[in-house]
Image (cartoon, one colour):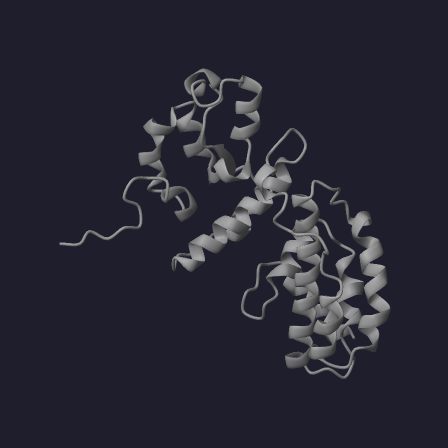
Length: 239
């Protein structure tokens, strides 16, 4: 199994999209060092690389999905909280002979709850900034790539402070008291994921506490998730 293990270790070091291994990297970045026994359980020593890659990828995708599900449900994402799910899957994965059997087994481990039910109230608070940044990095990357652009995913998820979370609405409840009279309600709403962006830290600092109407023009030079807020962004002029 040494060859398979070496392949997985390499995948954990960079966001490799070529073989569908990005989730292995995501799990590593999120501290899920317990993913390796789970991935290896799905592989057979006799598997060719072309057989091992898709099996490892789909298992890693499930673990990432379980992790994101816990973020959205406001549950702990500590590696130990996912250990019961990992331990429960390993025996069954070892019995799977091919990708179809692996996939069929994993389908039964998908979260039973609606994964989007809690999204409308999902937001940033004092102790979950890292998790919200992870979701924003994934969302921003998806939109960038779907628009045909290159997204610096490794930088988004890196340890540096080069990228920061931007609040679309500055912390000035008085500006919006007509729409939201209660300041506490306003502060809760401005932290929702739908009004958060991922921006370079230098730009984020320069916007400071500008009003929304004053800074949306600056968003047009940012990633597409931010730029779409600017008037006319992404629209072609027709004669």
